[in-house]
Amino acid sequence: MITVGLTLTRRGRFAVVEDGTVTAEAAIGDGPDRIPASLTDLGHTVEDVDRWAVADGPAGGGTLTVAGTTIRYASHPRDAALVALAYATSPFAGRDAAVLLWDGPARLHRIDAAGRHRPGDAVALPDLPALLATLSDADDLCCAGERAAEPEVTAALRAVVRELWIPPFPGDSGAAVGAAIAETGLRAVRWSARLGPEPVRPTHLPAGWAVSPCRPEELARALSRGAGPVVVLDGRAALGRGALGTRGILATTTHAGAAARLADRPTDLLCLAEHAADVVDPGFPDPYRQHRHRIRPLWTDRVAARPRDTTVRVQTVDAASSPTLATILREYRAWSGLPVLHHVPAPDPAADTGAAAAMRWGRAGLVWADGLLYRRKGTDA
Image 1 (cartoon, rainbow, N blue to C red):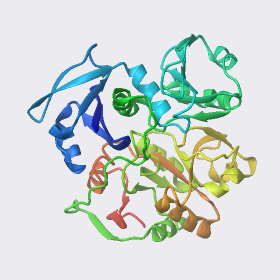
Image 2: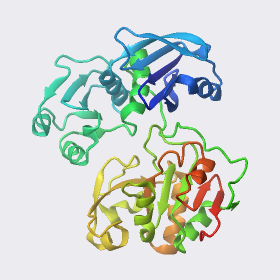
Image 3: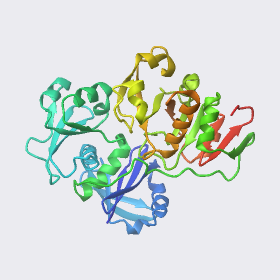
Image 4: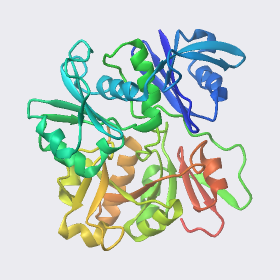
């Protein structure tokens, strides 16, 4: 069975759940025109879709024209879609769990092993202390909503519950996946953090750019010699808008500030998982960059993007989950002694369609994708 979930906001999203597996997720912009091509990439057509679901659509559902075909969709409240997303993607799906939805007033849901809401569902809570008072170390807790991912909230929750799960794709991307899950039943789904599009290789280079082969190890050595910042496009994009190193600007500590200015946003750290606890506290595995960690005093001068930084979001990287990034970090550590690089999620349009878009963006002189390094004339590499 193929189910398509949608959000139809200004920056809409599209997700496919096929026989219990999330197989695709992508932006659809202002309308559904991109849906047919996305389905074609999966070997399907609009006519192959069994069910359509929209997060926060009109009550009772509605109709939508996709590639000249009128389809009927079911509508699920955005809150219900996010609750479904958090529970079905969690390691707790199939057993009793609590789901915190905090997108305004905090509401605590209880889901049983069959995927049904338990009595007392959706208890409204006025603040964090009231929330903590309702939880215990016997609770497995899933979180959804913008506030549920705030560092001070997650730190407080982690100290109270048995286990905490926060999906790495909040907001509209999560709502699209959640709408498809809600339509087919609140049960576990198989998924990967990398379900976005592959980077498209340019058919020609813009004026002033050159390209040469470059293995991940060679990119790491170039960074250790002072190259960068560099836009890195590593395989399929991460689900939703969380770059997770797949679409980002990598920089050394020397160039961390420059990387932040390029994208007009703060820098995070990419760190080899086996060395994270040496660099930051607590340094637990954090593959989806969901928590803030405190930089250990001995490392502050070496890895802080700005002198006043004492905490930072960290994405821990290992060879199983991110082989290319792990190779870059290991080789960089061999040359520099540092197991970390700074990372800034690349903004649209720098990474929307691949290296060509990153070069057209024009704010970075180096772009690495699929074993190739694109260099603007006059940029050191």
